[in-house]
Every structure is written in structure tokens, then in C-alpha cells.
Image 1 (tube, helix red, strand yellow):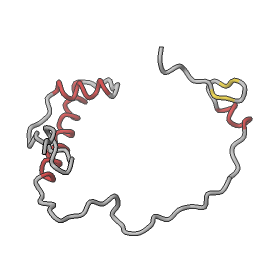
Image 2: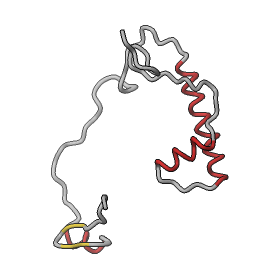
Image 3: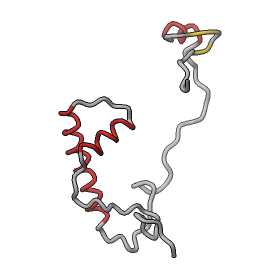
Amino acid sequence: MNIPAGQSPAGIFIFSRFLMPLTIEEVTHIARLARLNLTAEELQQYREQLSAILDYFAELSELDTTGVEPTTRVREGERPRREDAPRPGLGADTLEKTAPDWHEDQFRVPPVFD
């Protein structure tokens, strides 16, 4: 079996960080990807918090889960569902009053791509 690096046979990511704190450079990179402008104090705070989260995941990855069936929710059975029925909306007049930019019964938004 050819298993990619960082994965177990079940395809679950294996945390190889094991109690190693993130560097400020790594947190800066994550913040840039999330388009967050963080101060030096915030970078340090998030470094500590994210490192603690990763440490916790590292601890969890050491648990023996042999024989434990995967699950998608904690409770058994069906989740309650509401009736799928039409309900009254706000109406175009109300929406137009709250919209920052409105044209021909539609919201206008800035382009995502230049």
C-alpha cells in the first residue's frame, strides 16, 4: 500500500508537529492567507492559541481508536427537520432600502476578480 506522507491508512491526517509551537512566521503566513492585519501582540497571542490547539490534536492522534466506528454526529437517529414550505419574504421595497447598491431589483456588489 502506498500511503502519502502525513496520512494514516484510513486517510486521516497524522499530526507530526507534536508539542512544537508555531513560529511567528507561520502565524504571519496564516494571517496573510486569511487576509488579517494583525499587530505584533495579536500575532503572539494567536501563536500561543494555535499552538495549543495543535498540541491538543497531537494528543488526540495518540489515542487508540481501533474498533471505533467513524461517526458524523454524536446522537443516533434522524435530525429533526422543519417543514419545507414557502414563507413570506421581505419584498423588494424593503431590500432596496437596506441595500448599499441596488439596480433593477438586484443587489450590486463589487467584482471579485479584477
